[in-house]
Length: 446
Image (cartoon, rainbow, N blue to C red; front, side, top):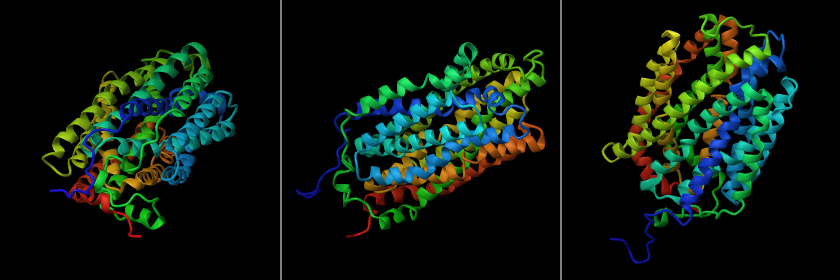
């Protein structure tokens, strides 16, 4: 029985929570549209930015991943700021910056100009990335958090898919540069809306379970790294991000190569920009359709399944994620070895399996740390998973492809990390229940 003075944690979302969820979802969707525009038009853009460069694939891999460098470097800074100041204002600045940088990317004339602009995209995204899931965790109670964060992260496959669909259409009709120019105005509109949003209180829905609400110190932040389920979650996400970041960026090139090699695209000259654009456009559009159908289903299903199983198995968020990776490994091998007419079906199944973890793992990040440190916890995760994940994987895959002479061989070499990710999450499952229960107390004493 609770004492009269004890504050009971709310069981309902705070005022304006669903409006904030819708806005953050839309921003996250645009985030991924901007992020993968270069991947969608990459094979064509590369010919203009780096004509006749023997290391063009390696350098293109750098451009795919370089925005992650500034993203991960600035994420802890914005995480620290977000634990102290208005997160909606920080998000507004981030959206404006990355939208302008994406628009300007359409004017890039070579490797270094695109390199610089991609770095600016990363800074803008760093202002947004840690803030959004932390705010959602402050607006929705624990019992709803898995489902809500799962809905929020549906924006990843939807935004990624829209990037390929929109860029593919613009590429075909207006050229690759206009695919970047298109992205400015939606971002500025969303940034304006953010200025009128209510800032949620940190730990508002955690009520009496939160022992302290003072700004965290560096000693408090060290406690995050001592939380075992947090460590396993981040390590598994790192292995998964390495693979996914590399594959998504290079898959259009891989499918184009197969269509040309196997004669499905007809006789084309890949050095001719017009022919290359026409050959690539349907592939990017197919990628968009596959990603949005598979990712939408699997992200929702993964969040729903983990919430249901969590009532019976304390480590369900990790177990669902783990099983998805094991199944995804087999499906990805099928992409590489099945005949081309079946490869798109295998890509669909691969994405279904690999996106099952999106809601569950990000829910773990929110649940196992003290509410006052959620934004920094997400920032630490961003720093680690991108440093050792998709910052380096696109260039490594490009280098492996140039060394082996085949993107298929490069994909095969790095695919084992899918299994590694599944193993790490399986091992972390036994710590999840205890870490979630202790999270509201994990802050140093004054």
